Image (cartoon, rainbow, N blue to C red; front, side, top):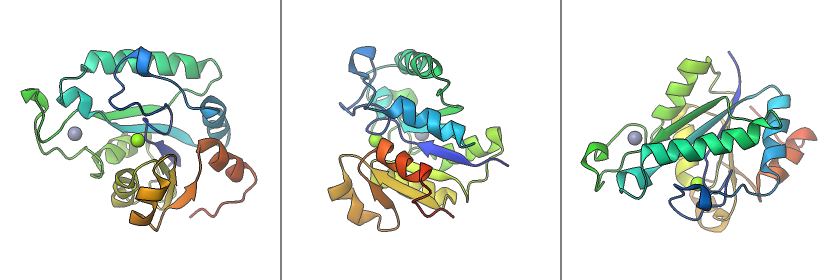
Length: 187
Ligand SMILES: [Mg+2]
Ligand SMILES: [Zn+2]
């Protein structure tokens, strides 16, 4: 079994403009490409787990999401930093698109996406790592049995108190710098 680092997408990998479904709205956060390459060099599988309710809301389509994913992976692959696995939830209970209107088991804070990744990549969930920017990311990972939980980004003030079990860092680059210096505690 392999350890993974699970990432939320919007607000962790790219700037969260809200419902990012087009290339025009997709912008990598600073130092993310380098950080992802560093994490792969440490031997972790890199797995993206992202809620994409913009699809359910009719703001963009699965094809649009795939286009953004292809661009993201293409950019990352230039430095060998592409994700090893990508999982997304297109659902929402109040979706305007009937096809995606449901109480699914994949939308974070539910953990199903982590279990799909576990099966496909033979992952050791307990010793894996979650990096998210909302409490729901941390809750999903925790429900999946991931023990190393990291909250980063713009919502530390509001979401931090909701997930006291998560270690807090300003951004991905700062977290990875600490990992490289063995300055973080991991299970
Ligand atoms: Mg996010
Ligand atoms: Zn879902």
